Structures are given as structure tokens and as C-alpha cells.
Length: 367
Image (cartoon, rainbow, N blue to C red; front, side):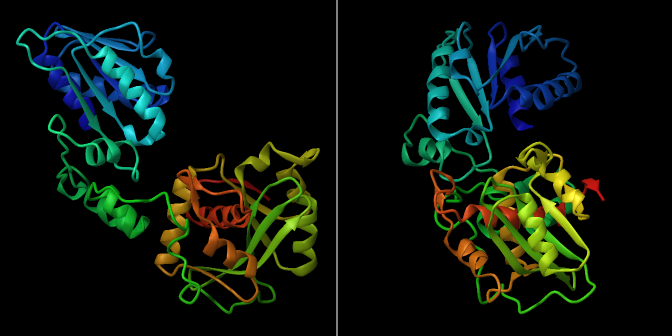
């Protein structure tokens, strides 16, 4: 974690002065920053005292103050000589701008040699957000941008880059491997879906297992029905506008007598459309349920669906699935996230849960 290392190096340089380190949330400080600071301080033979309550680390060189950025109003009551902001682009752009001005206000301890106080950023570029605006659109001679390619890191395992190239579409590889600012939150969401290239003419065969991706909604349930062909997912049917979970179950059973595995939205364990949990209703109909313990980030779900289309591992029968085809072609980004106003999101979410079901290693399995 380069941000932690740089904070420690500057702490040694500015002996007797406090420095500050920022992450988007407190769980990241607790689970990532605390262990990493402890590891590197130990490696450098620097004695320290970690105060998890006050979120600071005391060393013989002075104090390292750790703060989260999720509540800008809490960035008060202390001063420091240097600040490092880690993973800035995870934050919403406007909120990160507010946080930055708060941090500037704290970064004011005068240095004895008259050197200007610095604020450094370490972040993966997450589209055209704060980092792009700050270092590209608003660039001036007080700022310096250094791009570090992931491929230049000699400490990564040999398989890491291979896995990255298998897991992300080209536009994200430019961002996550090359450190380029790429527009990943505008235009069509499922940019890698090409109706001609990603279509199939498959149908459900008698006796084979079918796999259903399911998105839970009140009075507007959506599902995609798929089969496996040569290790590839083929979507062959769809259900849209179903009233509730029980209605979806009856539609599936009416159309197909096959053994059925449902890969649903994780919220089905708690959310209810008719008094019982959705998972309980599906179990009562005799379906096999493979539900993740929690839903992944929307960004990760979109990325893996795009990657599956790009690698020709996911296809749609465009004749029997017109709503699915239309949704994939027409859902766009709005304010940096997939637009939900056109109701394309329900069927596309169902596709995401289906694909993630095949790619996730751990499930809560209900039979």
C-alpha cells in the first residue's frame, strides 16, 4: 500500500510534526490501514503505539492521524504538516471536493524550513471524477501527476495481470492497469453487448438443468432463464412484470418441468413480497437456490457481465428475449450510475445475479 509507505516516509522527514492519512470509510481504516501501518512500521524498526479509539499512531517522530472521509464535518480539531488522501476516486466527486477543502484547512502546521505544506493523493482512477478534474481539467504548476502502471510493480504474482485481463473489459484495463482516466460512467452501461455477436438460438432441452437469474421487486419481478452450452451461459427466456415471487415461481413451473437452480438477489433472505421471505417462497416450490450472502458492488456486477459478453461466454436468444435485448442495448449511465428511470435495470440486474452466481466461489445453498 504505497500511500501508507509514503505517509511513514514523510512522518520521518517532518519529525515533531503530525501528519494525516485519509481513507473513504472507517472500515477501510480498521481493516486495511491499521494492519498495513503496523506491518511497515515494524519492518522499518519504528516503535509505535496504535490508538484505535482515537484513530492515531504515536511514534518517536510524532503522530500519524488517521481519518475517514465519509463525514466531512468530522475533519476538524487538529492540525498537521502533511496529508495523504488514499483512494480519493472512490468518493463521489462533489463530496471529495468538500473533503479536500476540509483537509486543506487542517494541513497548516508551519514547517521550519519554510517548505510548503503538501497534500498527496494515491488512487486508482475511477472514471472522470475528482482526480481527473483536479489533475487534468484544473491542472496548474502547483500540481504534479504521476501515473504508475500495475505492470511495473515487481512484487505482484505472475498470475495477477493475467487474471485482470480476463476479468475486465478494455476500457477498465486502461484505468486499472495503466492508470489512465477513462470514461467508465457514461453512455451505455453494457457496452460490450453486441446483439449480432452475442446472440444464440438455443432452447431448453427436456431433462436439462435450467438456471434462473432473479431480481426481487414489489409488483415488478424480473427473471432470465438460461442453459449451459460448452461452458457458456445462454439466456433463452425471460420473465418481466411478474407481480410477486410466488407468481414468478408459478410461471417457471408452468413453462418448464426441468430441475431449476435460481441465482437471486441476495436481499431475498430478508425482503418479502408476501409476508414470507422470497427465499422461503422459492424453497417451498422445490427450487435449488444459490444466493450470495450479500450483493456485490454495482460496478463489479456490471464489469463482469461486460467481460462475459466480450469473451463470448454469455449470449442471449434475441428472438425469445426481446425485453432483455432491449434493456441491454438501452440502459445508460445517469449521474455516474446505471439509470433506473427507464425500468431497464430490473432485467439487467437479473442477468448480473445470474452471471455472478456462476463466478462466485461461495454460496449459501438452499435445496
